[in-house]
Image (tube, rainbow, N blue to C red; front, side):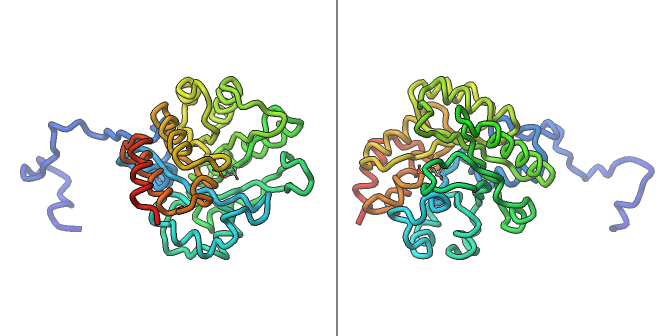
Length: 296
Ligand code: R5P
């Protein structure tokens, strides 16, 4: 320690500048509802949500854990490196990441942490926690994704998976992303999404994912943590961009898009066009023009 610093008596060195005109200790954290989170949690949230825009673009390619190789996801080892620079977060399983995605991209990871059923059984709602917290830490997960099936016979099981993951994540400063699943029995109504997003947030998840719906502004306003919107089934590119634009304009803090990116004729151009809406305030029309101009 320098000699000047060990003087404990007398006046403070007048040459030290404490910048008294600026209120001390203020942080304006950019992620909704997370002012009181711990430093490690905030650091991980800042890897997910860009501090400049406050938003995120997640690339979802976790479909294989239920469906096997979805159309467009046959070769993750080729596709994902080609899109890495255009998105903020890899949303994926540990198996896909470890086998197909080189770790040098330094992207945030939304780690799929539930498992238990596939399309072969005809019912995908029966899940359990599928990843130990130690392995999530080993994977350097920025958040852990848990599917919830509210309104089904498996509601209690999936909400138990959620709260156990939140507890484990809170022990180590890892946020939990609660996903609102929709299925045959579940209506995609504003009431359903308003209720389910709020339940997930109140159970402690730091991020919620759901689908876009009518009255989304009210859904987002009633959810005290950020909502990221899933892309859903493949739409024509202009319609997918309009959906993303409406979601962001009406309060979503990001998109978690899979099929509408990786099944597009030019996935890279599509990822970039969605990023323009998410981070650069492009309208849907501007983003679609950008897509047409840049697609190969
Ligand atoms: C659900 O959580 C899925 O596994 C996907 O992550 C989600 O549906 C987003 O992908 P897509 O935009 O294709 O719907």
